[in-house]
Length: 147
Image (tube, rainbow, N blue to C red; front, top):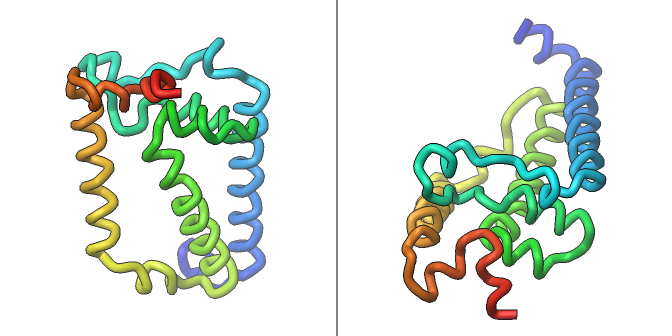
């Protein structure tokens, strides 16, 4: 099957198009279904009582889709900043794979850069759980206190 994907450019393009349509369908669903009314529970928070680095991302994504960038930043500042970079990476990687069948994007990204981002996200997850001002502003929606 992998050999077939390497040879059949049309099949790769079809797979990437299908993934893009699925992502668009997810965005349309989120646009019309407010996570404030139907919250997506965080398993990590439910089990531990601590906020994970992604807590608030559903509400932030909903706010981004409605053009409320400040609200999105208040729900999850790291996700709001990293989401465009992640979207750019996924789009470039998918287009590269669909056209060439190879991986030319990952070779151009520094391992130190990726490790730095992962460490930053991990530290954000730790710092947002410190129950002292100003760290408590990093809980989902906490930055609204400043505005």
